[in-house]
Length: 86
Image 1 (cartoon, rainbow, N blue to C red):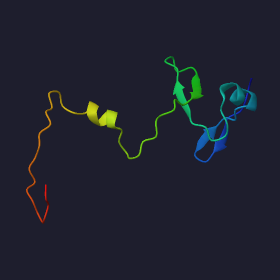
Image 2: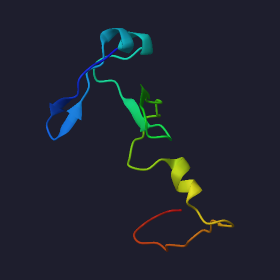
Image 3: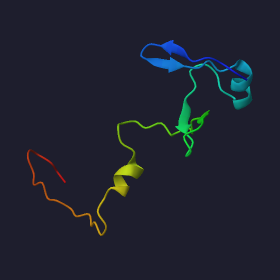
């Protein structure tokens, strides 16, 4: 199959035939991963691995992985301000 690069803003784009998209289970707006082969002679386009929805900017797994080895959690006494019963 041969296709043509086309200008798309400041980039170049390639249109993928519907038969390829259907075979991969992709539809308009789907996320894909694009990478270059080690020999830099081909481009690989594949469906993006689904990532769990993250509520904020950080994932707890990444935050825990960034903690120093041997980290020990400690309590901190903030004191009281007001009429707290506990």
